[in-house]
Length: 228
Image (cartoon, rainbow, N blue to C red; front, side, top):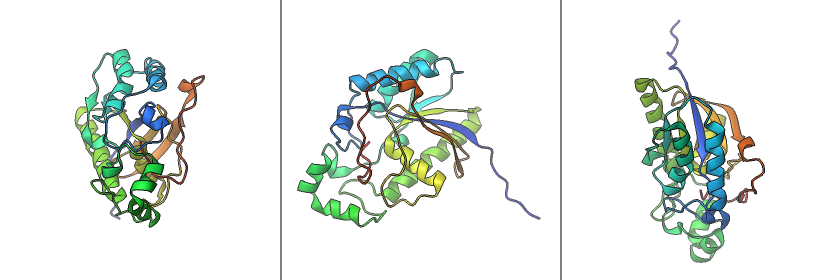
């Protein structure tokens, strides 16, 4: 009997960037650059110290400032450089980037109506739809898996964004693209996923032991779209 050949899986460590002031203000960041705030810098330092004793692994990050700053302490501990990758960027929110949810309600009620339709193909002007964003994230994962096979990487670390991690979580759990986020994604939290670029297995999610004692990060309302 013919059986499909399953490609070997890699261990993928995913990190959401440290906190920014725009996280604290509940603003849509998207592709705009916002630096880490004081708490975000502490979170990044804790992350670097926590993983310092691990065998150095390939370290990638989206090319946006908040992810690169989060990766810097770990890169210093491992004496390596961070590889920037645009595919790992946050979802593009177009005309509402930089706005709070309240400002979106006031200035772009048509976008709020589009969200309420739960249509994964809806996109704000100049932004990505949930379906487009998910496809880009899957492209990023598959590209990393193929690169890992070529170069012998076993457990790459990627510093990315809340929306990116949400797309991976949805793929792993079979959650539909439409609808609000259903998983915690803390700033500078660690998430361990095994994948071959198609199949996903969550090993551990939202690990924050290394952040104990720090003030809590901003938490988005459960029913609002991601703004990371």
